[in-house]
Image 1 (cartoon, rainbow, N blue to C red):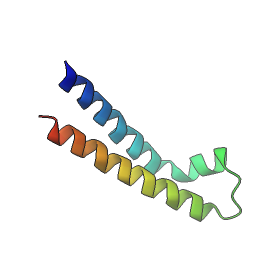
Image 2 (image 1 turned 180 degrees about the vertical axis):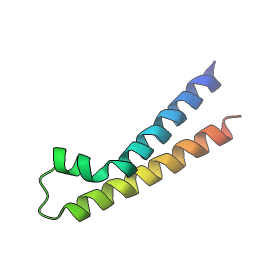
Image 3 (image 1 turned 30 degrees about the vertical axis):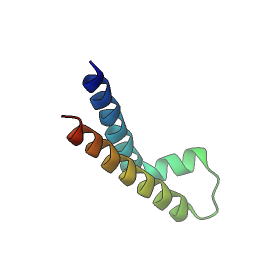
Length: 63
């Protein structure tokens, strides 16, 4: 049961990371008022990439 919960958490992290990578510019326009949107979107893309990698590692090592 615990492994299932850990895998679901990892899957949610991967899903959130992929959403952040692909929709970074839309999210930046909607929630933040940066003068330079490139900095905000690149920050969200980096955060999404790290989140996706950590989630994938959680899924991989929870076998």
